[in-house]
Length: 276
Ligand code: NAP
Image (tube, rainbow, N blue to C red; front, top):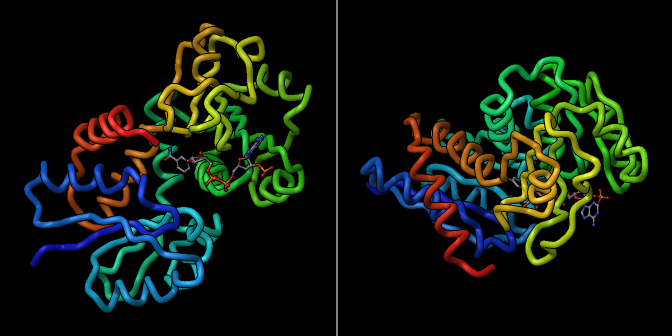
């Protein structure tokens, strides 16, 4: 029987996950389909219980349900620490929750810089994505600085990490970047439709900095354009992380190796084709 997967969230109509996973199913000749389901925050528990009853094989969870969904699943320990899930697997009968955002970002950085241990990583943001990324990098021995607009959130996140410090987004940011090996934008700054803004300008960057923007719409954000202007050699856009987090979910659900290139092409084509 055809297996059914999907994503729950609100809004969810513009999610790239259906195009990415359906391309993977087609490439592997799997009898499966992936659909987007609009679910409100009040209905998340019903949706997860209903999905289990209906025999849905796996779900992704997106904004604004990632935190609340945690209460309706057995979550893996790191997802509990992060306080949010983005993947649910129903194959064991009990819904099991995972957070593959951190896995995706870690894979991007391992491919880009190799060893993470001892690297100075400056993360802009202290929201859901920043949390997922920082817990995974912390577990790998990175030295993390969290720079966030709302100081209290940066302080709170830092206190949960083993080797981390916090910073504001003001003048001290330049000094922090000077001392960093990796800069990650995990805020929504630069995202469509506010494409012409960046928290960091070219004069604050050095060529050996790795600049990774997790925003994927647009694919080339203002931050990445600034990085190019600064002569930064290693620049990574948000599509890779999106694909790697999706690939990690795919592996959890299907136990199959996902066709990464096909998934990435599907996402990049959709971003070029579609108007958001
Ligand atoms: P979130 O939980 O709402 O967090 C948003 C973060 O952005 C907060 O730290 C917030 O700071 C900061 N921020 C928002 N507007 C700002 C502004 N004008 N100036 C300075 N800081 C600002 O969102 P999220 O789930 O972490 O997602 C963040 C971004 O990552 C989104 O663009 C999302 O699409 C992207 N994302 C990409 C992937 C991927 O796979 N590539 C995965 C997940 C998320 P305050 O704390 O001060 O409000």
